[in-house]
Length: 244
Image 1 (cartoon, helix red, strand yellow):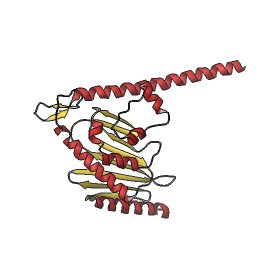
Image 2 (image 1 turned 180 degrees about the vertical axis):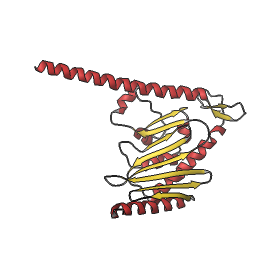
Image 3 (image 1 turned 120 degrees about the horizontal axis):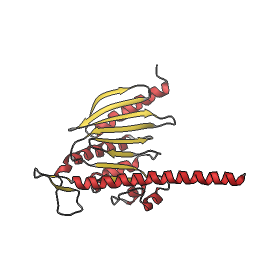
Image 4 (image 1 turned 90 degrees about the horizontal axis):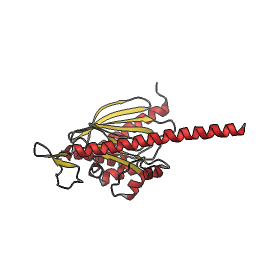
């Protein structure tokens, strides 16, 4: 039997999800829930989201939204900027794109391949929804890989904010599908180029170059952390030897 507190959690989250999905014109699909978790599928148009909420130890919930998506192959990562990471950016240990929204750019580290995909997918409504989510050590974090979009955060959320978030995610999935139809230009900075079929597609060379830059930055960060740890250990050892 569920504990009364966890039972109330599941019931209240289920009601919240049903209301939020209805508010954006979506349909509720298969749903599972126990005392401390809820997993619900919902759809609008051709897109489907899977939303899960797990009761957190200190109140609130750990949320996850996942969607299979189709469209041009592009990658995107949005995560909170960690304390002291501004220095890492100056050293080139962290790559961070800007989308022209100063508060959003200040709060989040943005990576994308091709880089210009960030401004294409992170429109004002999605940026506003992400900004309203409560901050935590690991979120909110949005990731778009080859065929999956995931969003994770920890904390509470109101029905209005959840419905706005769902609407912005459905719209983002629309943009993912339409990405291959974006206008190709002769501008060398554009992430799109004409495909062999005559439509427009993500330029694989630009995507590969930006992906390689992201990988190099992560390797530099790992090497920097490792060297700092070795230097710290050497300093500690020498200090202890002097103390003797």
